[in-house]
Image 1 (cartoon, rainbow, N blue to C red):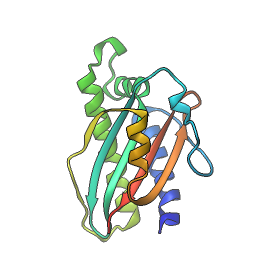
Image 2: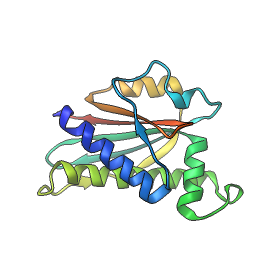
Image 3: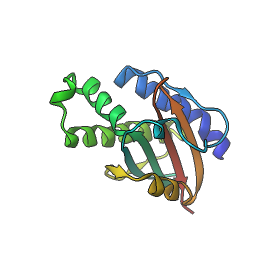
Length: 158
């Protein structure tokens, strides 16, 4: 089942980033890298998370550098960087999780009625991110936009 999700997740996240934020992403091949690209920049990390339930039950988690999230919020709202607050950036990460998860579960099964939880967003440490990735079974995809990267994880519950 996880093999089925990876190409769908890559397609969905690429489309969302291109159409909503004008950012072209490249998926990284293979597994997780020892040191993800976005951790090399002196930026804090934001985590967005949303739960889903339908044919499958689980959680979608998105990790991205706060600098990238702020830039995306600017693009999304048509504001300058000095005009975007931390709460607006956090809200944009929540909406991003909602858009990605909604599209992903619909691509997995269009006939199922899916329920999504309210998304949450906030800062996370590198250690917490690594511990988070080891919870449950699922699939993880890392992306790069040429200068920064992000990580998408979909965990499934039994």
